[in-house]
Amino acid sequence: MSISAPGSIWLVGCGNMGAAMLRRWIAAGIDPASVTAIDPYTAAVPDGVTLLRQAPADGAPDVLVLAIKPQQLGAMPPLGGPGTLLISILAGVEEATLAARFPVRAVVRAMPNLPVSIGKGVVALHGAQADAAARATADLLMAPLGRVEWLADEGLFHIVTALSGSGPGFVYRFIDALAQAGTALGLPEDQALRFAIATVEGAAALADGAGAGPAELADRVASPGGTTRAGLDVLDRDAGLMRLVRETLDAAARRSAELAEAARNA
Image (cartoon, rainbow, N blue to C red):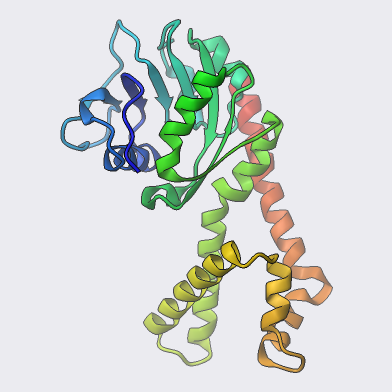
């Protein structure tokens, strides 16, 4: 995939997620000279990208990307202008809150996750007031990051934040648990971890193209009276796994809603 920059881009925040997005844009063909990264702490940016420690006092970009922490929003100056598209990845911060703070022509919320750094991420988008041109620009910038899908309802962002935004962290916990269980049963620690990572990677790739749901795939693996069925019986007992995952996502979604409330009242 090769793309061109949709005009000038200001990337405010160049931490883990901001930097990952920036690297993917450059790899996809965006001219580094079209990007200005604004971050008081980051040590370096790709060659050709302008790095500023604070936002310029005047001027406005074509695209303003907010990749800061939600708690930093209150300290942000009113960047942008009447021709600026604002794309925000701030968890829990609603479009109305952003539109009230920034003098821009349109706001698009985005929720990426960490695997965008290798082009295998998930990006959810929503822009209630975004026209076709704004949506096309958002699609253009998010496409190099992985799977991109628009949400019909902004309220779904709390759930998406819990599921795909926070989801990699939960998957890493499962990988670690799988590896530690293998080690406890006698495998060398490093080998158990390699097996766990490769198993999750392969299973996810198969699920993506299998044409069947994960529940059906699990049943296909589990022969009656076999080893997989014995293990699934433990996971399925009293719907324990389903309950635990539901409680996990519910906690993350509640925190997203709390961040939204804090941003509204900031």
